[in-house]
Length: 160
Image (cartoon, rainbow, N blue to C red; front, side):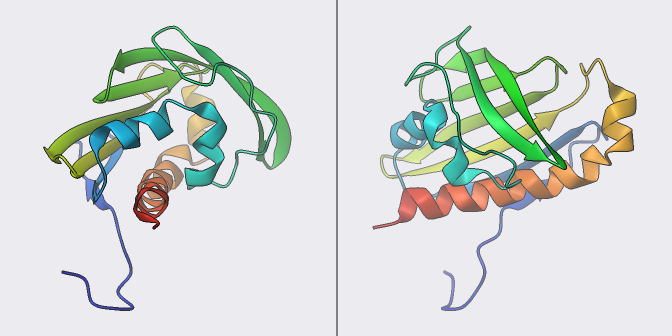
């Protein structure tokens, strides 16, 4: 039980692979509701722990396997990115990648009808630009970002 003023944190997961950064958190909300938010690209800015998502979201209102969605981004410079959903299991798993081939994956495990565990993973193993990721110091930065995103997801889902 958290005391008032205690900061919510996601648990960092040691994956054993320097190119995979992961964290998890318990959210007091149904798994289906958490999944609904993750499957709606227009809501990603609300939970973005990197603060890189701008506006200009394009794509379907609800993602599915093979869906493409895009968004305006800012990381030092303004740019636009298009993602493709590459893993999808309703209410349990969704992952997407873009041209660089790294993946953002969310796994949801129901604990009870009103509580679930969410694990977010950045997987850079299939990146076609390892030198870019290294130059940007993406792996240590991304470890922090997945944890921050999960905390924001928890805050959004548990807001009354």
